[in-house]
Image 1 (tube, one colour):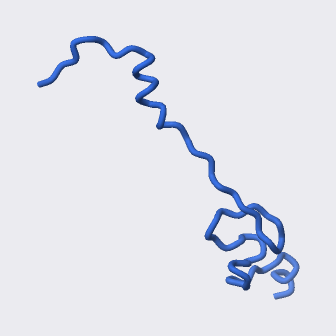
Image 2 (cartoon, rainbow, N blue to C red; image 1 turned 120 degrees about the vertical axis):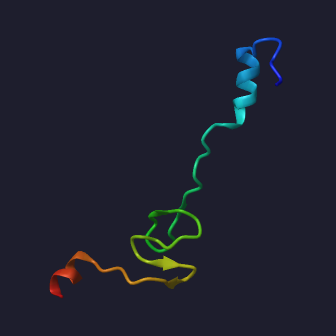
Length: 66
């Protein structure tokens, strides 16, 4: 079994872990309602996706009338 001859320094350890950081999410904005939306996903506020209404969103006023 391989055993390291010397202890790994904090510098070398940090260099090895330099790619372990969190990456920020790419946030876009809905062209209809300007709410933040993740790319390639339907807008949760208005249901808009790729130039059309992908899903119908019920509003609070419409839910009370039903």
